[in-house]
Length: 335
Image (cartoon, rainbow, N blue to C red; front, side, top):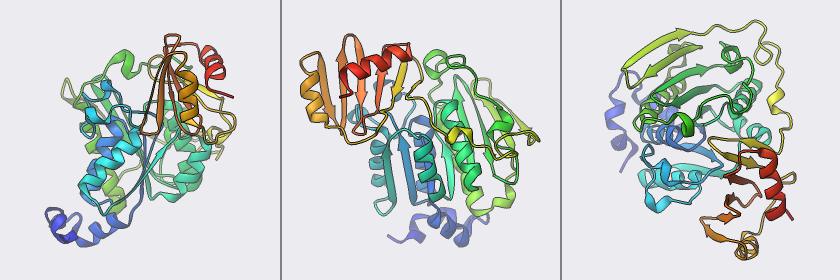
């Protein structure tokens, strides 16, 4: 099967043609977050001809993900999302180059991966990580697309460093932890991520083949339930510390823990390194139920769920207080 046959229905589009299709094939797109939004975006880009993808996600597939993620099934439960998505993508295009990184995208990872990318697309579930992405993209001059979904609505805005506003022009400072609604508290309509993922993928394709047709700072806001949408133009903030002052504070060191969606706290080890999950499984099996699947350990101890990754990072579920989650991590995981 030739690539001309695979993409024949797209090659006839005057907006792309063969030159545009070749540009897609040469591009490398970084997908940050491989949940519903990120997986739909990645799948749309791969099927369109973006055959070099870097997938980054810190979490595993859970049953609650399946109502809105087309790429995953029950057989993927417990697998790292980045790896499960890589496998799904490779079933579609076995010749693609898809790299899965099962890790938290912190400053170190952003500084490593963003410069390697032609473009960054958003599949994140928290604003804090988006500030890290924004800092890295502005610093290294890599375009990215801010996209978010919640309840029945979503929004999308291309960010082109040096040409228009960045995320901090739209949201100057992060809100206090726990003040924003999340999918765990506000819910999410199943088809919504597919719609915003398709929109984000279309913007990404335009940026890769017809950049001049994309308006920097064009914000689309869509409510799928009411079937209403609006288009806004976001102006660059003259006093923006990021794109104006080139201050990249979110690329500096971060605290070892952070509150995620719902009652989940992520703990990062002070010194990342390989963790012997088999040894940890044996140790924790004396205290509760432990499973090891797809290179990820899941344990239930003291009514608290630990999802532990090979780099020592852990998701602690069932403890609302980050300090308490850190204490439990130190007690059961850290050595």
